Image 1 (tube, rainbow, N blue to C red):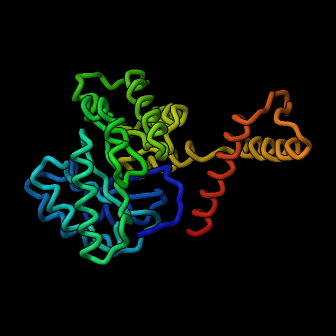
Image 2 (image 1 turned 90 degrees about the vertical axis):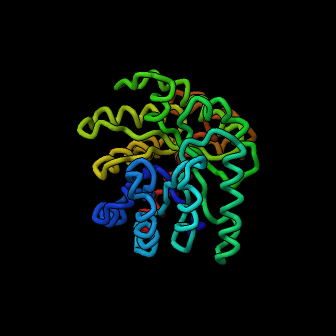
Length: 297
């Protein structure tokens, strides 16, 4: 399991029972791959798929490697975790999280498996997916329950089904849920969340618009369901050359101003104070992280 700080722009799902798609996913430029034991695997195949997923954890990969297990209240979750928490696993994606108690149970079980199997304590990342009305309503309590969670994800497919909401192309109906998830994450002191998948595989313009909307709300990345989506998502969640140049100018000019005893300046016709500078520093830090990953590939 990796402790290196990495960009988390694109998380690509691959069905755990489809060997060729798993092999291909591990060779792609997604920042992380999620081997799926949940929705992509038929109920009858779930137990047998665990062995294939566990074997895939030993293969070379370009990014981080996660497994989406079945929800905590299903008959499969415990067996999923027993099978896949082992060397080579970077983290667990936990779907349909609706309570602090359920999340704490999985956190406790991960701790026991890490101890029994000689893995670093707390080294297995845990990303809950918020995809029901109950999960969204209880999100604040879920995130302050003292678990290892460093970021959450939003699942609009199940969420819109749960609340009987039409999932439209412009996704205006998702605005409230997205805002709540970003705000609750910030209030809990964890990282920015990951946005929902885009299901219209041939609509690249729609994918880009969805990703840009999520970026504007404050998400750090987006989950993907097809390899062709990776490039679009990575591009949207990577600062542009213009954004980088502007951020670097702001940081340099403000550093000089601070040295001269000033905390507010004008640059390129704009008023610059600490909030603007902090945002610029985030851009500089983010592109540095992305460049380190790209340089390592």
